[in-house]
Image 1 (cartoon, helix red, strand yellow):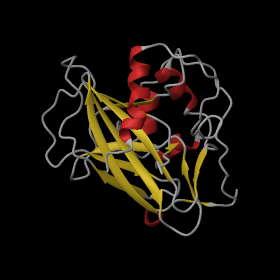
Image 2 (tube, rainbow, N blue to C red; image 1 turned 135 degrees about the horizontal axis):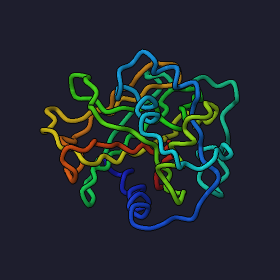
Image 3 (cartoon, helix red, strand yellow; image 1 turned 60 degrees about the horizontal axis):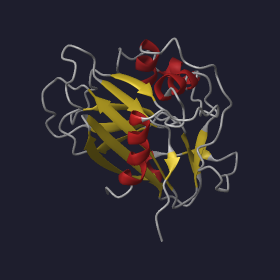
Image 4 (cartoon, rainbow, N blue to C red; image 1 turned 180 degrees about the vertical axis):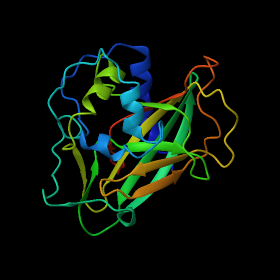
Length: 235
């Protein structure tokens, strides 16, 4: 269950420690998603929180791209493929601590006999074991950008077209970086709640009992969300 996270963490840690080469090809999410959060309280849905903390200095909207490894030809699923449903997916989680951050990963394998798709920028929040959302601020991040938070968050508001297609047996995952948790421990562990394109949700339990180190008492706790990317198992 933990084997996929270490392959992605070095990239995240590198982004925290160094300036990356700007990449104009950012995966955009959804203007439509804003409407989906209208009935929710603050900090109870990803995009609501993103808009509240959106950086005014974000870069201009760039071209949409697919979540495919650079230089790797990947057969796309048929354009009329349906969104993935909870029964199509087998989920797993992993976690790790790094220099005060809590790093979480979730992966989803298509166990059905038909291709389906996920929204490339995941609609995800963290909840407790009873399903109550944590009072945290969310943003997207893109480690390929020189401004990984502002650029990705800016782009995530413009398009619902970006999809990550899963053929049967294929796996995709995303990562979270959780910082500045100044509240008490979390009985039962944090749960990653993913809202799928069809509106259904999947709850992925984790072993995380606390967020990142409390470096700014009285400040807001934040969670960064990466786009989905493919996970290929070694032979």
